[in-house]
Amino acid sequence: MLGLKLTTDARWAKLAQSNLAELLTDHAFCEQKAASNAISLIVNFPEYPELVQTMCALVKEEISHFERVHAIILAKGWQLGRERKDDYVNELAQFIKKGSSRIDWLVDRLLFAAMIEARSCERFRLLSQTLEDKELAAFYHELMVSEANHYTTFIKLAKKYGDPSKVEKRWQEFLDYEAQLISRYGNSERVHG
Image 1 (cartoon, rainbow, N blue to C red):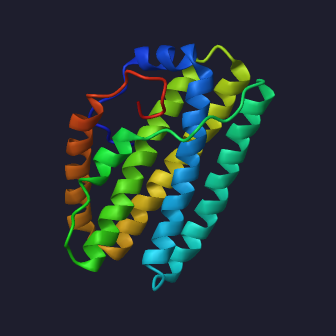
Image 2 (spheres, helix red, strand yellow):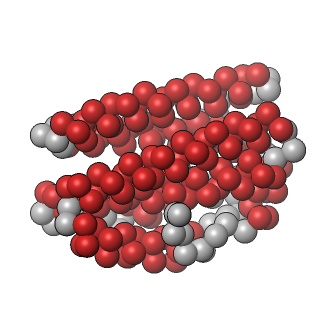
Image 3 (cartoon, helix red, strand yellow):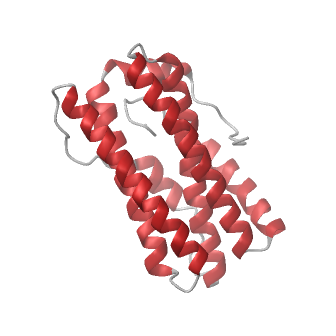
């Protein structure tokens, strides 16, 4: 369903499990950044009512995920660390076309978000299948489903606002670019690391 061209090596899940405090802090900030990205889409494209409404709902969901991850951190006796730089997301953002038309920029922003959701979904699936902490594994299964829904939402919006055939071509370009990008990651306890 996701169409990812390169799957995450199972060794990443073992690495992530070796330092759950790091994984959870990074994950919490991923949720916060997803909420911020949705707010940014509202701010930059207020003329699209369906987009605004959809992003409003997404902001609420993403910030509730942040809150839930934070609660897990506290329940384990840890504290939320400082925000981590997400090199994967920053490099992926470089693929967004600069200087293009407003609608092409919107489509690229939506595909960028879809790509992050797709990779997060794939990583959460792996965590849900491998974590020894069954409660945490169930939590990641729930979030895997949520990320899959977000992925499809962003793809549908991109096809609504852009030419569907051009969007599909651009999505394939994103998938190719992301496969090259993710091949350099998987070596840290971070969601996209």
